[in-house]
Length: 475
Ligand code: FAD
Ligand code: NA7
Image (cartoon, rainbow, N blue to C red; front, side, top):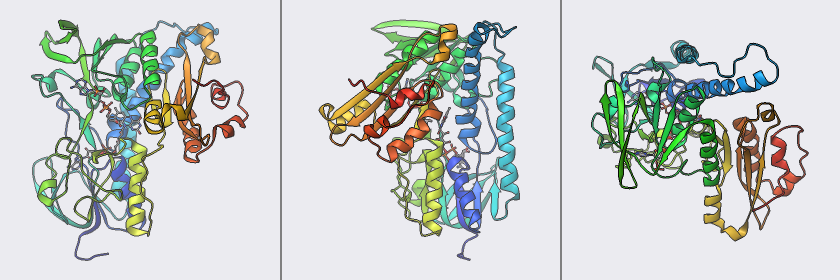
């Protein structure tokens, strides 16, 4: 402990990464300070402790997604003899929002209790700003400042939704994922702008809840993911009722009697439509403005605002570290921010030497037909190893229970295997319970298992996962 400073370690940002650092450091008996402050969205939406994931990210998103999936089962319930189930019954938005918020507030309370009662943690519900390499200014909601000092500083301020710069009043006329999960009034007929996973997930569950939803796609679906699977997700969403307008972006959005008149140009022709809600999901920007980074010498990418950190999470100022979504080149996921925070504390205080690895991280897109993947996409594998050096195994299948109510569409799986050593380098699964199925295949890929190892596995019958250890057809 260095008595020169008030804290051994001070964390700015109490989300997935920041809270992990706080937790790990306090367990080692360190004097830990945390500043976490939520700047309201343009519509004034605010939330409690825990950061993006429990408040306006993974958790409320998954609850709404599950609600839409539960609704889908109405058809199977009716078909299999459950009495009193109307497959066409309507959904109540307010009931769902209240329930989601009840669960979110439960997480907030658990965080609050922990932050306030744990010895060694001092929590400031204040905005943090760097003053020098060991001093942080803490600003409360009334603009009052205090200063604290720390030996190490960790920046974990996350990211916030981006807005286009060329549409007047866009922040007033649209909402983002920061507002959706606590929206007081049902969204109604909705235009979702953007085509990455936040956009498609929101469009998917809103359609499932019974709303008229259109997705406006600038170029491709799910940039960075396997494109064959991405297109299949789009096709399945269309079967489920989501509409798509592809190859354009809004040119203007106007308020017309409380509704949103959206105009766009497609094939040289101006088109327009009126929506109740426009949900923007066009990416997220690092929340690093006004953090005093430049003044202290912490380098950022000028365009994205993301902090530049090395493999050991150190910024250009050696005692200042940065983790999570605000850092350039990191996967924007909760578990990566958590593991990164754990390893940082191990390296700082316990002679650890492991750095965070961002390759072969399993992830799932919670679209109506869920998509789990780990390792290379077909595009990335082809680019790196050459098409002629790969075997791509595929399988198309239908879950048994889908036959009860004649669900349309099919599931799909793909394994990417290197011809020279038979090692599986990519796993893609489009079907029910993708996160649960994919997690285990994360281990398969990490252990560099061979296709012949999978062939030696006896499947579990009847299941959809048995398809994944029986793939014999290759493209
Ligand atoms: P955050 O969790 O964003 O925390 C940063 C905290 O810092 C916030 O509380 C912020 O208010 C605070 N802060 C910012 N500036 C300051 C300051 N100057 N002073 C004090 N406090 C400050 N990931 C998954 O793994 N699975 C999913 O299914 C998933 N779904 C998602 C769905 C949506 C809609 C969104 C938006 C994200 C989703 N994510 C998902 C991503 C995941 O939420 C983020 O990757 C994760 O929360 C990042 O953690 P973090 O610690 O970097 O930042
Ligand atoms: P991403 O992954 O950054 O994707 C942004 C999407 O929005 C992508 O489809 C873009 O199309 C599209 N986009 C970007 N700018 C525009 C404009 N101006 N107009 C219309 N469409 C646009 O964003 P997400 O919100 O899904 O997720 C961000 C992270 O948050 C994610 O990694 C999660 O961890 C949480 P493009 O493909 O570039 O043409």
